Image (tube, rainbow over all chains, first blue to last red; front, side, top):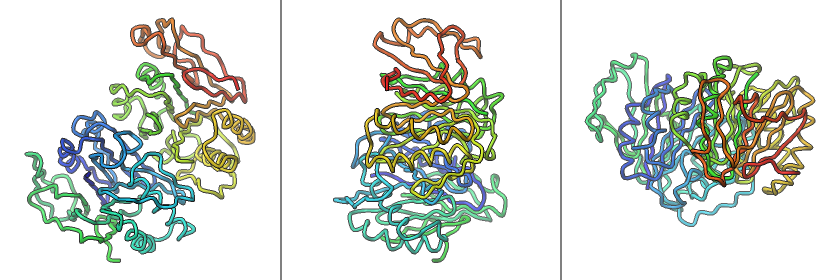
Length: 252
Length: 252
């Protein structure tokens, strides 16, 4: 099993604090890590098949505060697919002239959908297969990039048939919004004014968000297990799909 | 105009020496850089819209000797398209379950091909349009991943109609081979046994490849302008397409 971390903000925000706590969990989840940052429609995706705990790439991410409105990160403990770069999340593909970033936590059994269109897995994980299938079906449902609300509706139809094969916690973003689907373990919160202190659960590290933010900043954080001990994390219900935009969940 | 650097080896090789010289040229080519490494069919692509001379990402690349058999790098001086992440080479797409990496040096005028299939540009460069068109046409010509020889033949048909729009120096790889197309400025050489010293043209730095290699190693380097002062670089003829595999050019 793996762990997911997502961030969606109303202003470009650095993820150094949350990633630092998250990367600590890579002692157990040692089979690679990845993190993708949207900057406008552009994406940087840093992956390494070394643990986020000792990877020079992860070290650079911790030191270089890349500011982004949509971030998806993943630390991996291999279940299906070997330890190899092509099996390392997040995965990136292009559809409708937009990049799509996807990361999955869970295990899909006997999931071999018919991939007859433009998206084929490079590696051999159930996760990349699921991503390719989602994009294939999105492309069938919409001729060009639809509204966030329409995309959310389509994703609500597409997620359940995949989820029947096992646990399907995933994060997905196209740089406009961030979708999160809960199955077994996924939590979220919104950080906004008035900002407070937060203490990382995995490290003896506290941050006072008030020092790093303006009163207008708002950021949603989605993560497998709560990152901090003193904030109100909410659990996703099994099968719940939420879409985050401008740092908050949309009602849809 | 931009500069290209490609490497193709018969064994995973680090590109630290060549990239160090190449990155020095980023003082002039300051509008972003990128470098993609194949590891098997997997790819890591590091991009930054800062200059390779002062980017923390480039600094990590210089310090972390990633070993790869196929590397494509690019430093950018914006001609078409703004300075933004989505306009930063190399570009990566998936076709036939393989990743394809592309970088271009040159300027294509009035190049607006019909993109009616699965590949659409995210940014607004002539280069990404050319890449999308090449992949679209490759997909029309072959139902699944063809042999390197067949791909080369198809690329020899596809490159000239693009090249008529301006200068079309490009590097392309799918992790099996590396294709290089020369238009105005592109050079190559093969480093193999007996290895010698080489002195970087742009920095007061010499390396003795014999200390870092085995007699069986062989690597082809393709670059816009020769990197070293004391090696035999050969110039591409205008319109020449070469394919490199296992560290040497194939006759095809």
